[in-house]
Each structure stands twice: as C-alpha cells, then as structure tokens.
Length: 269
Length: 274
Image (cartoon, rainbow over the protein chains, first blue to last red):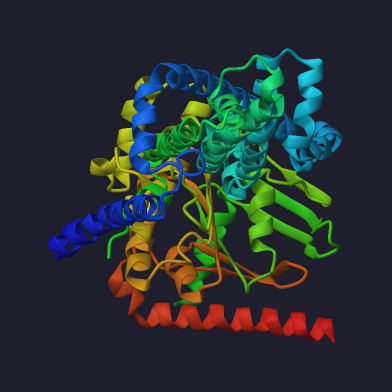
C-alpha cells in the first residue's frame, strides 16, 4: 500500500472529520441566534447553553435513566442476536421449520411496534415489556441477514465439503457460519439502532402510567411538566447513545472482518 | 508419429490392468429435463492422464462430478475396484473451475481443510500441509489470505488442497480456463511435473484442444447434448514434455487430429439435432 499521494489522502480524511463538525457548530450558533434574537422563552425553545447547563445540573437524574435505557437496549440486542442467529440456523437446517415459522417472523416485523407495545404492557411487567419491544424490532434484521448469508454459500464449497464427507455440523460450523458472518454483522449493526428505538417506543407507550425511569420516560415526563430544557438534554443523550452504538458495532464488524472481507479493506487506487 | 509405435503403446496401456473407475452406460438427466449424458462408457486406467475434451455443455463436467460422487447417475453404473472404494475418505481430489477457496481462512487453513474434516488437527497436519504447499511452490504463503494471491496462485492452493489427502485419483474440472495464457502454460508444466512425481491418475476436463494434447496420455472427445464418447486419441509423445514439444511438428499434428475429432463431434450433434 505505497500511496503516492499520502498528503491528499490525509487532507481528505481531515476534511471528512472537520466538515460535519463545522456544520454542527454552525447549527448550534444559528440555534443560539434564533433563541436570542427572537427572545424565545426557554419553555418553548431553550438555547444550546441552557441545554448544556441542564445536562450538567440534571445529570444525577439523567445518568440513571441513561443507564436504564442502555441496559435495556443491550439486553434487547443480545437477545436479538441470539434469537435471530439461532432461528436463522434452525431455518437453514430444517425447511419444514422455515416454512412454518418464517411468515410469523415477518408479521412480527411489519406490525408497527407502537401498536404492539400497549398490549405487551398489559400482559408483562413493564421492564419485561420494554425488553420485549426492543427484541421484537431488533431481531428481524439479524434473522433476515443471517438467513441470506447462510443461503449464499458458494455451491462449489458445499460440494467440496460433501466430497470430503463433512457432517452437517461441520458444514455449518466451518463453512456456513463463517460465510454468513459479513451479512450477520451487517444485520447486527442495524439491530443495534433498532433495539434503542424499540426500548424508547415501549417506554413512551408506558408513559406516565409506567414506573419506568429510562430516557424516554424522562422525555415524556419533562414534556408534561413543560421542563423543555431537560427534554432537550434527554433527547441529546438518546441521539449520542444511538451514534455510539452504531460506531461501536461498526468497529466490531471491522475488527472481525478486516483480514479477509472486501468491505473492511481499504481499496487501493 | 509412426503407426507401429502407436500400436505398441496402445497394447501396453490396455495391459495396465483393471480400470481405477469405469462408467458403464451412464446417463444423467437433470430435473429440468436436460439430458447431459447418454449411455456414456468410459474406463479410467491407473496412472494415466485422461482428458475429456468437448464443447461447452457436452456433459464432461457432469461426468466428472458423477465420478466424484457429487450427484447420482440417472442410469448405468459407476464401478470401482474393490481395493479402491470411492467412499474412502480423501481417495479422490477435486479441483473446480474456480479456486473455490474459503476467503476467511489462510492458505494453510484452506489446504488443511480436507484433513480437518477427517479429524486431523492443525498440529498433526502441519508437516503434510507444508510439504504439499512446497510442492506447488507456495511454502512462503501459508499465512496469507486468498484475496492477497493472484489467480494462478489461488489455483495452486486449490491443487494443493486436492493433493493433501494423497488421493489416487485427481479430478480437474477446467481448472485453468479462467487464467491468462502465460500462467496457464506455467501451471500446465507444473501439473505435469506433479503428475510425474506423484504417480496419480488424473481425469482432466477442458475445451481447449491445445491444452488437452499438451497434457494428456489419452483424450476422449465427447459430443454435446447429450454427452457421449465420439472418439478416442492416444497421445504417445513421451514425457516429460516442455516448451519444445509445444512447437514440435508432432504436437501440431496431434492438435490437428484432436481438432478434427472435435469438429466431427459437433457436426454429429448438429446432424442429430436436425
């Protein structure tokens, strides 16, 4: 990888990092100006400084809620990975099972989670209901992508394994699962964001009736109390959480695939 | 090429004893109704380099796959000698048209695969894998991933994988068709050297007249749709063969014979179709 233009490459990378930051700075500046120049009261639209200060003063409350949301999200994601990969492997091994169950996985996916959440809240204790929502939205992309990956194995490689008398288990462990890994990881990356959305939706559906204390619950609560600065602060934390989850899962995918998969290898130009 | 020499060679080959595998009246019809093979008779003799030559779609790859046990014939039998049952693990090596390597595994792991599936650990297999890699000239590339290799090197890995179980029969399905000519010639030479050194029986499929004449001790020309044996050619040029054989009058003459046989096979197929 002897790059003849290391400087140009470096400049482009710098630009890619700096441009979004510049847009962010400009946005915050514009937001601040709008609030100041129009004298907008903080219960309608708080300025960025006030939001930052609220984040600091309300940190004891918000950090607790953040932790609750994070735990729910990661539990939902972990169950989605286990359930999605597990079901995909089962479907791959048994046609009958796939034909019998796959339609219901699709139905679970296409029914809006907002519509299912109230029902779940009736039948399950709230933490379990929130977790169930996170799982329902997150597991399908893992299932669909892993299924695709398991089914796209090079046919000649399957022939080769059969030629050498490989057992079903050996074909699964040494051929199908490694071959499905890139698609599986792509599914998990999508599932990470969706698990957060599922958790938030369920908490909002629980609303003030719930005994929850996640970030979404704080948002609903702050809205009712017209504590708009705190609403913004909680919203900010949710966004940051989503971004961190996305980048963390991208990093995992990159580390796992970097030695062999084209998606993780820098293209030489 | 003197006719008497031909006859002597024929007699010797026939006397080489029982075939290592014999296809008798083998037919293969696919689920979509296409008849790939129609009553094919073919005996593979121990130690020979047999090439199935024919146009695309003449069922030569199908025949090779049936020999490998990838799919069952619709009719006829495939007979194996008692001391060499097909089911014996690693009895057959197969090289596909593409290298067919696992991209997530190193060269070492790819070559280790057939042994690993038979329960041999990497440590136990280490000497054999490294020896086989050395045979194909890739001893220094054991820890490299396939994507870092050229097309020719990938094919060498594929050949090493087929050889690592020390099979008696090596089946090769147009292995060099996708390579450039320079690489192809190199691999042709290396394959002949390996065949000579290891004493395997090779069944090689190609649609290249020139490749088939250069490599083979015997060529079977097949007709397309459905595949049947049209003609058989003994290539009695002595081994080792090298670049000088490629430019010799004998080579050119044999290529002409093979080309005529191939043209005849295609004419027969077209005649049969109308």
